[in-house]
Length: 409
Image (cartoon, rainbow, N blue to C red):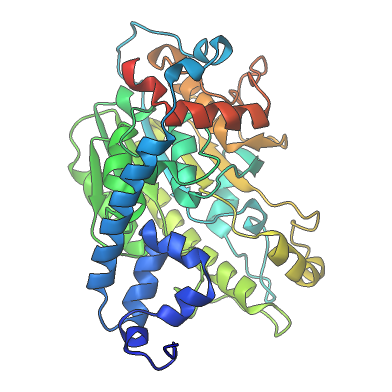
């Protein structure tokens, strides 16, 4: 057997670490941002493995999509009745800005470090001036960030196995962006990451804008440049942040201080949150100065949670000592919603799901413009109810995606 620690392949590709963790091969074939970073930082030859991986992923996903297709006749009437053909082709009444913040969990809002400094002061202040939902359950699965983007944009849940954006990225999807004169997705990674160029187009966005792999401050500078030059209104803008992405090594320094009993990975996560929060705060100041808060719906939410069961247990002692709100073993993504027509701040403590975001925005933008009702409910309409249980919604979403049901709608 070839010695993995001394073989030439170890120096070309970090074979040892991939072989030690079999699931990394899945990550590699899907060409995710984290694999790009891993190979770039740990290989002598960084581009060749990336090209090979993406080529393999493209061929693999094409074959897999063909094998996973099902007939559209599998959709029952109670699902198809959620689609209402409409003749309302008018544009949306205002701009829409959606910030999908990587791995953002709601318990970080309002907490302090061990020197009494707030971890996310800008987000905390926003919750006091918005409609705030602190208990939104993450419904992402194997597609993680790609799934979060799918759910928010389409109102359907992800595949039970595999990443829909990779396998069925070129499907026809219901979406919010199609009702706007201009629209763009701005990403902090390569356009191949999570198949962004293809998937963003399928979600109705006219542009996918990337400057390669950048941190959040550069992402928001790129966003400001787009906003300074876009001429068509109203616009729909989607931002995907990255600086709170694991392994939380992007922020080496910062003002937060923690005692030695704080688990290192938890400390590093909170430092990344503090940095991302400062970038969001600066961007919100820019929007206010531009007068965009007066004619824009703004949504800030997490793309998925990051603390899994093992980490919730590992961090329990530190959480008890500091009063962090994941003691119950549950963690959520926040939804911070600012609207130009509703200036009454309030916290809504009901538990909701990510699939409720689409119908809520649909209601704010005018449901008549969007034929697809979604599988969640409008959180601002007390009469709105979910048409199915969450388990049934996952089941029918799987069929909707695999049958490309919206293609002929």
